[in-house]
Amino acid sequence: MSEPTSQPGAEQQALQAACAEQLKALFPALFAGAPKPVKLRIQADIQERAPGQFSKQQLSSFLRRHTGSTAYLNAVIKSTHRFDLDGKEAGEITAEHKQVARDELTRRRAKHQERQAQEDAAQRQRFELLRAFETTTLTRANFCALKGLAEEQLDGLLAQAREEAKAWAARPRPSEGGRGGAPGDRRGGPGPDRRGPRQGRPDDRRPGRGAAGKGAVQGRPQSGRPASARPASAESRPSGDAAMAAAPVEAGMPPSGTDGAQGEA
Image (tube, rainbow, N blue to C red; front, side, top):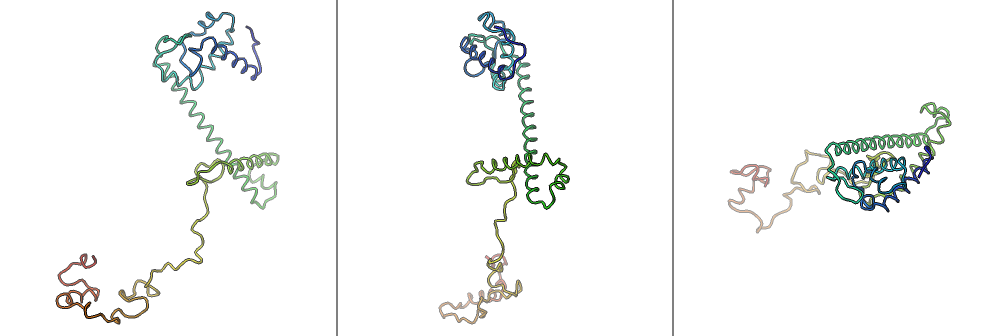
C-alpha cells in the first residue's frame, strides 16, 4: 500500500483513522480498548504479521500519533510492562521511559496553562475595550488613538467582545455562591452594594441614650420619670440585711464585702 509523500491534513487524518481501525480489527488485544504500552519495535512485528497491508510511512505516522497521546503516556506511567500484538507482556517499562512520559505530561500541562492564561487576558482586554467604547465621549478616531488601535481593527474586536459577553451571560450559574464579573475574569467582578441607601433606616442610636449620649444617667426609664417614682409594695420591699445590701447597688456602687465582678454578675 503506497501513499503520496505530502497530503492535505484532512486526507492524512482520514488515512490514520483507517489505519487505526484496521489495526484494531487485526490485533484487538493490543489496539482495542484503553491504550496499552506497546512492545519496542512493534512496527516490525506488524509488518511481519500483516505483510503488505501497511506501508512503513503509514505505520510510522500512526504509531507516532498513538504513542504520543496523553492517554498513552499515562498508561506508560501506570503500567509495569509493555505488551505485544497478542496482549501478552513483552518486557518491563524502564524508569527512564516512565520519566520521559512524566516530563512530557508536565510540559504539556504548563503549556496549556500558559495558553489559557493568555486567552483569558486577551478576552478580558476585549471586554474592557467594549465597556470603554460604550461609555466614551471621544470620537472614534480619538478613541482608537487613545487605545493604540487602528480604526479597521476596532469593529472586529468589538464584535468579538460582544459575542463573548453574550456567551458569558448565557453560562449556567449555581443557585448560590455564583461568581459574576467580566469574561476572562476568574475572580468575579464587583457587585452592587446590597446594603442599600441609609434613607428610611431606623436610628442607629440605642434606646435610652438620646442626645445625652454616654453621659446619660443609667437606671432612668425612657419616659423620663425617675426610677424611684414608682412605689414598691410592702411585700417587695427589702428588710434587714437584705435592705442594707440592696441600697449600695441602687446607688451604682458594689455592696460592701463583694467585688465588682460579682456585683455585675
